Amino acid sequence: FRSGHYGADHNSIDADKGGCLLAEDSCGHYYDCRRIYGYLQTQQFTAEWELIMAEKKKIMELKSITKEFYKNKALDQVSIHVFENEILAVCGENGAGKSTLMKIVSGAYAHKEYSGEIYVEGKQMHFEKPLDSAMAGIAMIYQELSMHLDSSIAENLFLGEWPGSRGVINNKKMWEKTRECLQPVGLEDMNPRMVLRNLSASQQQLVAIARALRKNPKIL
Image 1: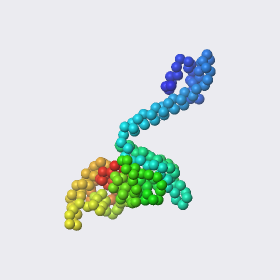
Image 2: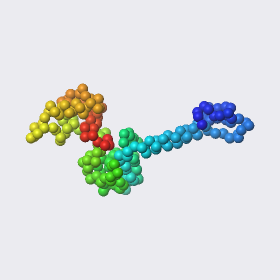
Image 3: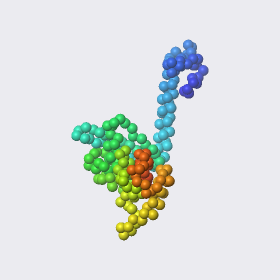
Image 4: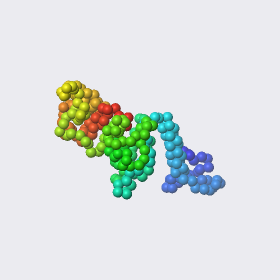
């Protein structure tokens, strides 16, 4: 079926019903052509998408993730596949468990605190802490930023990893690297010495993204 083209037997279109009426000399049944066409479109899209995904590299897989808080299930048998170069959205109402799932992936909840399995590039992971998740190539950016507002952009980007030697920070090198890190998020003209508090909320979020991208994660 194609929208607006119903074949020789179709002599009129019922716009109110969203379908078409067959000629009297045909079978006499009413068909909701728009609904059928929509269904076929969905099936075709699903088949094409599965074919595309089959050719892509699977980066991460979550299997039957279940998490309870005092006998209340925040997550119930959640399974997700994440592919290379894919942008994946996890949608749901408040309390649906989105943040809980992200905390599990980021290692905020140790693997003993939930049931299910996490695989990164085919290898099963048992995260005990966020550092384990980071070492596996996973970077997480939360809605509430965990950054030092009274420190500079450069200091936030390289927190705990300031370039230098013998306890002396090489500020010039840090500022140069900061400009390189800010370029992918469109903040290359920003002064690396600017205090983070003086940036807008959206700019602070971009700095957080730049900090995550600096470590070249497999999954962001």
